[in-house]
Every structure is written in structure tokens, then in C-alpha cells.
Amino acid sequence: MDEAVLQDILPRFILINFVTLMKFKPALLLALLLPLTAQAEEKVTLSQFQLGKTLSGTPVTQESLKGKPVVMEFWGVNCGPCLAHMPMFNSIAKRYDSKGLVVVGAHAQQATDEEILEKVKATKVKFPVLQSANGPVSFSGIPHSFIFGADGTMLFHGHPDDKDFEKFLRQAVKEAPAPTATTSTSTLPGAAAGKGKSISTLGNGPLVPERTWTNAEGKPVAAALMSVSNGQGKFRRKDGTVFNYAVNKLSSTDQEIITTALDPKAAKDSKDSDSN
Image 1: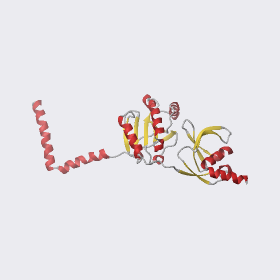
Image 2 (image 1 turned 60 degrees about the vertical axis):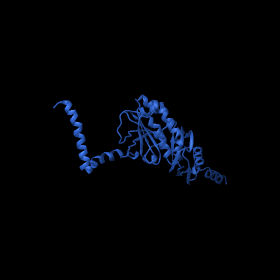
Image 3 (image 1 turned 60 degrees about the horizontal axis):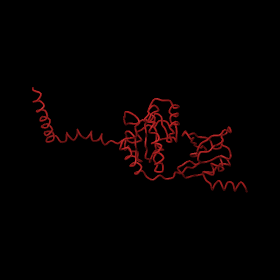
Image 4 (image 1 turned 45 degrees about the vertical axis):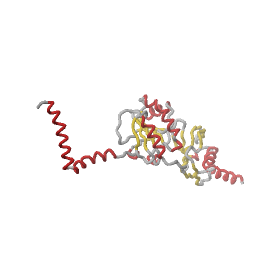
């Protein structure tokens, strides 16, 4: 058959069969289209992502991210554009911290923990960095950003320079509920740490800004105290690394500082009682 004739007949054949299908088999057509619609509307949530382990910064878990807008940035130590974007994400983390936004860096290349931490320090990353994080969404190339609303729904994924990145970032922050102060209860051992009483404190920032503490070996340790739980202090160094240390192994002066930070009134009452 002549090619020109075939090109003329084929569109008519397709149109006639489509009209016939619409006339006699609408249910069949609907059945064919429904799976495609369902697939397009299927939403992706943060809970479907494996977060891996936290290499630096405040430990990140699904529980710690619950109810917060999140930006997850996939990057790599050998990716020049990724490293160039670190100041941008530092700025975003600082700008929206009061809104509850959490920025997380998910490393996505082959590298040792030491190599990753070296780049984190060199680029002065101020947000938590994860190793081995992954999710259900396939993508090629980094940097690659994911934005999640406070309800965990993915709002955006793509390059951080994409024109829609900022739009969905603002949407995630705008729709997030106002952050509330969290209450933590700690039992501190020893007379200089509240005499074993349960002490509660309210706040979102560090309990004690970065200072030099003295450990059990008499060695100085520079870090900020983030929280206290069951006698264990959670400390963060300037490079973002986090570690735990028993409060009762610190110097008596350090313990008094922690007690005062947790509950100034309790600390004052303790001193008054000791003086009597």
C-alpha cells in the first residue's frame, strides 16, 4: 500500500475506533484510565524515606521531624554545585528556624564518614547531615532537593535552583503550625545538680550556649548544652557533632551552671537551703 494512502487512512481508523469505544464501551474506557489517574494522584510522604544515620548536627529521626516542614537536600562531597549551595541552605535553615523548618543534608555519593565530616567542616554546614538516606522517588543528578509540608506530604522535588523551589518552600513554612516550646523533664544526680529532683525546662534553643566544660579527666571540652535527659547531657560542638555525657561527671561548677539553666528558681532554693 502506498505510504501516503496509509498516512491518510490510519488517523481515520484510530478516530473511528475511539468513537466506537466511547459509544459502546464507556465502562471499559473508564477502567483503562482509572489506574493512570490513581498513579498520578498517589502522594509521597516523608515517612516513606529511610533517614540513615546522623553524622553531624542534632540527631534526625522520623519522630523528631514529625509536624515540621522539612527540606532534605541530597548532595555529595565530590559535587561542586552541591558544595556551592551549602551557604544557601545554611541561610534557609537560619531564616526559617523560628517557623519550625528543619533542613537536612542527605549525602548521596560513595565516601567515608570522615570524608563527609571533613567537607561538612570545610563548608561550615550548620544543619544536620545524614549518611545512607534514601526514598521512593527516583532522580538523577545532584544537588536534588525535597520539600515536605508539616503533615509529611512531599510538595516538591528537583534542583534547588528550580523556579518552584522557593514557591513550595514558602508554602511549606506558611502552612506549618506555629512551633511551640517543648517540655523536657530530667533527673539530675548530685547536690550540685538539683539534689536529684525532677526539673523541667521550656525552650527550643540550647540550654547553655557554647562554653568550655571540664570532664571527669579534667580535660576541657568546648560545646553547647542542648538538653538533659536522665542525667545525660546532650552537647553540640561548633562543627555540629553531637555527643552525650553524664552530668555528674562534670565539675561541680559545670553542674551548678546546668542546674541554673534548667531551673533558676530551683537553683536559688538549693543554695539558700545549703546556706541554712
